[in-house]
Amino acid sequence: MDRVPLVRIGEVLLVALRMDVGDRLALTLQDDIASAISEQGSRCVLIDISALEIVDTFMCRTIANMAKMSGVLDAETVVVGMRPAVAITVVELGMNLRGVRTALTVEQGLAVLGHRVQSTNR
Amino acid sequence: MDRVPLVRIGEVLLVALRMDVGDRLALTLQDDIASAISEQGSRCVLIDISALEIVDTFMCRTIANMAKMSGVLDAETVVVGMRPAVAITVVELGMNLRGVRTALTVEQGLAVLGHRVQSTNR
Image (cartoon, rainbow over all chains, first blue to last red; front, top):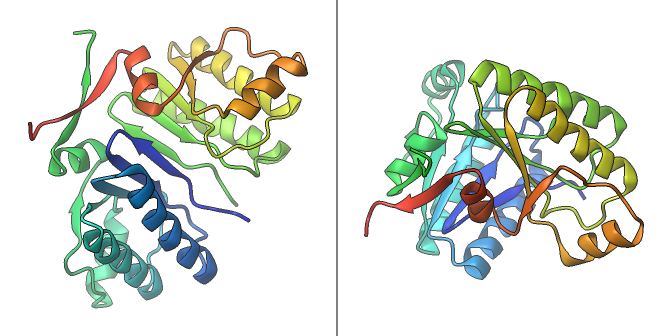
């Protein structure tokens, strides 16, 4: 079955959402994230939605649920890469992303979560 | 169309491969990686194959090609997250991953590429 890739970067779990997350995949994703957090001891979840051109109410609720669920498992969540058009839609349709922290880029999301990617060459 | 998510982390481009990369998706992926490197000025490409339980000769060739192409665009490539069974298959079938650097985890791959993820809380 098709799955959303979860990438473990130290204690950060990176979730790269794509366009086609339907109802069933969203439920599997919640399971996968919960398992990954508990098995890998992730402390932070970074949800990258930069590939999403449209976010509907279902997707909003899914993201909010994932953040709540991670919170219950003691992991912080930050949503990164929201496109301007998506931000406008979220506000105009009065969708609820309450309690979900956001950042512009993955680096800024990591910074919010108290991490940074550093080049060791310089 | 379905696409493999590319996540930009600073000057690192993270490619999270999933199970179902077929011929057409592989070609699109090469295009996407090349565009991303040139548009975002990525210096390093990290290909995470931890989701792959099987790697066939086509996938091997695709990965090797992506590494070569990134090299032409002056970006280093490291393949991370290879499963033990995949490593055995690669060797037993005499598949060619010459010129492709590997690391066990994303953090170690970042280290090979001269980056590290650091917690700023401690």
